[in-house]
Length: 121
Ligand SMILES: [Zn+2]
Image (cartoon, rainbow, N blue to C red; front, side):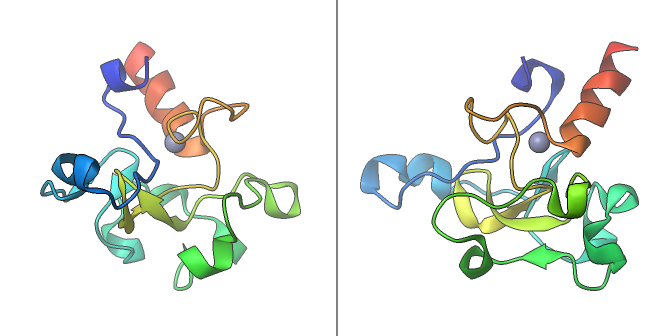
C-alpha cells in the first residue's frame, strides 16, 4: 500500500552481489528517504523534532545498535535523519521504525503517516 502512494522502502539490503541492482541504483530523495542528512535538504525538514535541535538530527548506524532504535524517545515520535534506507546504509529515513522498514513495525512513521493522510484526502 505504501508504494502505491509513493513511499520508498526504508530498509537496507545486505551487501551481497544479488542485491547490487537495488543498492547501486542512483537515488536522490523521496517522500521518506534521502541521500543526504542535511536538515535543510530533507523532504521531511518541516517535521524534524529530534532533541528539538535541527542542527543535530542524524542518528548514525553506530548509534542504532544492531537492528532497532527507539521510535518514541521521550514518548514523542522520532523524526530526524536515521542512517539506513532505500536499500543502502548510506541513505537516510525519518524515524527508527516504520511499516516501510519492516512489516513487524506497529505503525508507519510520522512522515509516512502524514503523506498517506495527504494522499487520501
Ligand atoms: Zn516511514
